[in-house]
Amino acid sequence: MNAAPDRAPKPCTSPAEADAPLQDRASFPHVREIPTRWMDNDTYGHVNNVVYYSYFDTVANAFLIEKGGLDIQADPVIGLVVETKCTYRKPLTFPDIVAAGLRVRRMGRSSVTYEIGLFRGDDTEPAAFGYFVHVYVDRESRRPVPVPEKLRRALEPILAT
Image (spheres, rainbow, N blue to C red):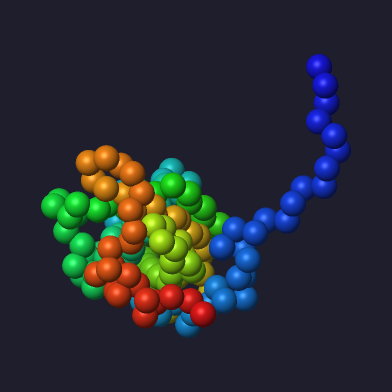
């Protein structure tokens, strides 16, 4: 068996880690309050890690529906999540109100990278910070297509500079 040559690991360059100084509440141009639920807590007394991802989905998809006119049942183009990451910094617990901050890190031809900060109440530092990437595809063929213009127009104001 051949061993792989020794290599130093590459520094992480994910969107979430590349811009660590911008992770305060003020750097998110769109915020949605999400109440925690009793069932969000796990046996350890804090919101379970998988629930954080549901908060990510909630803030991004509500924005796309409300601001971008996305019709999740009928639009011919849909966004598929192809990459995601969350860094947990402080626990959230029921009955916290989560302020989910949303911004767009990058908008390509057929993909959008969203960054999300989850803040407990009025905290200015996130309890969690993460990102996910949507690749927009034709609903039927699942082949990549350009980001729909109505979504692009809605996302431009929350594009991080």
